[in-house]
Image (spheres, helix red, strand yellow):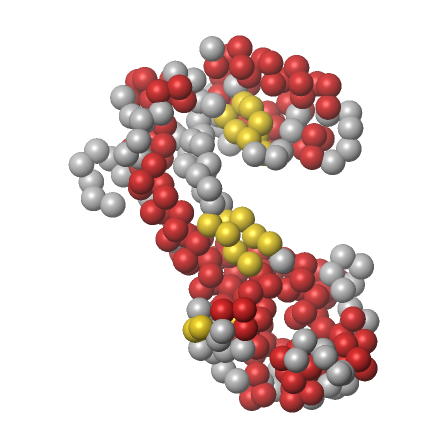
Length: 264
């Protein structure tokens, strides 16, 4: 049954992969070599299917994806300059109470505050993901069980295999929105406050706090600041540094495999 379903999806794949965009990312020529590098068996490499929009997932090796914890980079950016608070939530203290921006004398302090807020949001997303996975393991998934060998051999439900079967990869990830917005914002702060000294902290924070109302000159300065994806190396580097913040957090908190009877 698994092979039949996989074969059908591979036929669809052959029809769409000459196109542009996401379909090009899901093709045997790209997916299988990646699995091969990791030392997977032929049956595991060949029996892959689409997952979500354009991801690839091996039916014999990887678990399903639970609705993932989301991170709003834009919220992390706002909390950076409002000491962990969001205006939308009436200044509820959702993030870390970082320093007053007016005390910052270099962009490294801005980046440290932003990284702190981003890591804070990511930690809570990981907690939500963990709770969801723990709950999922309590429910049976008979249709999914027959698609894979591991559930039958180990007599475990598909959702709980990541906790007990070392060959199974438990797929969890951090969905994110607003990354480019946050990059543009940080780049504007660096450019306007520190590099060119075009704005003071008071002028910028007041303009942002009033949503630019009545301060068109400041809004124009902000709108014309360096942007992500326009070939400016130091701006694009901010995106890579954001990824490093999250990767470092995930590295510090790995998901360990557990054997039967072990506590979480």
